[in-house]
Length: 586
Ligand SMILES: Nc1ncnc2c1ncn2[C@@H]1O[C@H](COP(=O)(O)OP(=O)(O)OP(=O)(O)O)[C@@H](O)[C@H]1O
Image 1 (cartoon, rainbow, N blue to C red):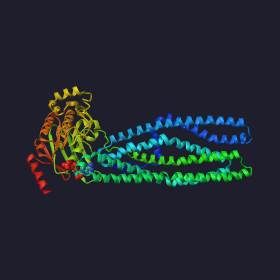
Image 2 (cartoon, protein in one colour; image 1 turned 135 degrees about the vertical axis):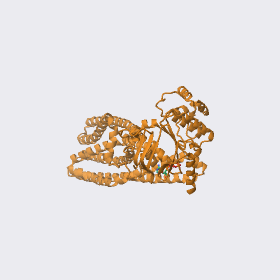
Image 3 (cartoon, rainbow, N blue to C red; image 1 turned 120 degrees about the vertical axis):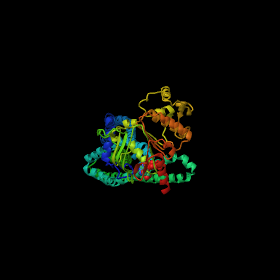
Image 4 (cartoon, rainbow, N blue to C red; image 1 turned 60 degrees about the horizontal axis):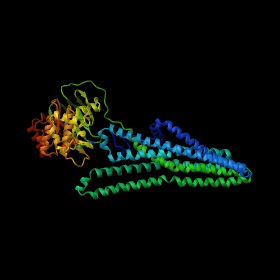
């Protein structure tokens, strides 16, 4: 399955603006009470905005022209109350929508992160962490900004525009049509230009994602960069993505700002038309001065929101581009679904590969028609040249990937029939560089262990003592309470492996896979790790991938993995010979 988020032909679908809006509103529908209240406040606001020019015109024609000042005072008072209500309703809608926006941000970030947790390793192979971080942080915030600031303004602008348009047509149809004619040009212009603006914004967000990915890669590898004196190289790479980010952001800014001057120009034209034509109508007694004043105010009421719509429209385009990037993640589904149980296969072995074929997406075939069985409690070794497919074989044993064809059976059942929690209880996997979390040694040992999840430091210490592993904890300065602050400092690789090994052994797995787990470990630590492995339950099957041959000396069976095949390599001596021959020939 193609999980590449940058690949337009990938599984994530592009959405129309309408479908996108539906999707976004789906996320805030549970807040409909607040949305309705904000909407009512906005309607009230728009209605009062529309009414005030009419009152002003009415006051001029009925009280100013006839010099009835008490009437002028009365209407001034009414207008003042209307303005106060306007203030209140504006505050209410801003407050309500601000809250909805923040909660949308919260929900979206949770939804995207939870989706990421469900996606298979293939997704993370095909996408850079920095870009994903940018989607979670940056793109979701574009939607928040749209919701909390732009949306109500957007709707209220529409309502005011519509109301002002109706007033313009009711007061004088000819003058109304003349006043509205420039708006037609604006509509056509917006329709034509919008897709281009959205594209520019999408490019800008993508460049921001690339820059974030670059920063993440450089910071993640800063030791190597310094050690190999590659600062200039990374400086140049960063300058390139920063330049690209600047260029696309600049172009998006230009595109977003194209609406405003055009809208302002047509708004001025409309006012000019009304003024000229209105004065003519007054001269032929078809319009009063008061109505012309109201009229001009309605033209402003019509074109001002339209002008605001220009900037709101660009905020909408930015939000839609952000949503596209988020929706692409949300629309992905894991290809590692749990299938219904297919009944049990023969239970004579713990793990079986049955006519297994495997290729990485868009890659060559790595495994070709593989068949083998692993028995309970035995130790197996996978050997072979670099790139031969050992890690891939082990990954299929742990269902990090599914075979392209064929089946892997675990304990007599298709491995796909186990839920991920059942599977992870049965399978332990230790890598060359284990991952630790910030916390303590004890917390890291208990990580993911449902059986002892509630154990505190003392209980864990007892458990470790019972399992005969107590002296191993002595390698940590403060025992189980030794803090682990970051991956980089304060803890050696050997110590990390001690934690990872104890963690794996305490889970009592049915199968434990060690992928080059002792490759970079000194002989003394290796002995410690071997000691931990001896505490594994007798039924645990051990699979060891190793380049160092001494580590596989005691294996019950050795498999040679190369050129798409996994074949029994015979005794230890035969396997060594085969490896040496292979090296000579390569
Ligand atoms: N995520 C991936 N995407 C595409 N190809 C991959 C991926 N991982 C591994 N490969 C390719 O699959 C082949 C087998 O790799 P694998 O890591 O299984 O070999 P290995 O025997 O474990 O090698 P090593 O001893 O160097 O760890 C290699 O050609 C490798 O380039």
